Length: 289
Image (cartoon, rainbow, N blue to C red; front, top):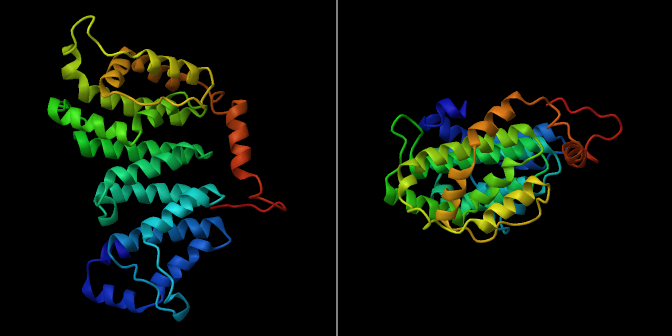
């Protein structure tokens, strides 16, 4: 209803005068994960229309109120169940695409914080949504993919610096070797998109005058071998592009598309699923959200 009537003055006045905004915030703490996930979606919608007023109850009057962004970041980093965290990532992606005020104020800081949380999440759907948010950020910087997808050299250089600052490359490259196939597929799509944007400058480096990619390639080999704890460290945009152009992403994309479910059912993936749900479904409870 908010999506369709959020701009109508009468609806806005009635909703702000009701208990809906305060109740929505309270439901972020509900014991049931599907209720918390629904509350996250509602917070996202209400906030987008400026309809999430500060609570009016006396017990909250002297307490500094968190912004919706801070509240949802808290859910993303502390909620023990996957449904609410997935809902947060969907809201964050919508906010980034729609230019939500608190996000537009400092999009780089927002993206960096969200990707840091998503990269360490045990739920593969959260990691996939993190890559979706990264793709939305890429499109904002470089424009959508299309027949004339190439980005101007100046815009490309600035965008690559921003992507290094938010550590998007580290997240994307690490995801390329994720034990859950959908994550690797999404990362492959994202890197192909970026490579297409950078293609026009592919001949800008003279032979023998390219950047040093030794450390990046070594880290990627360690990640492929399962040593995911090793960081990439500082990245130079030129080195990232050189590595991208050297990778056969199309072949990897085909391999991932043809693979069986054994990738998703690997011991590491199974262990992650177990860790993500331990303590959640006790006493034969079923969560059917």
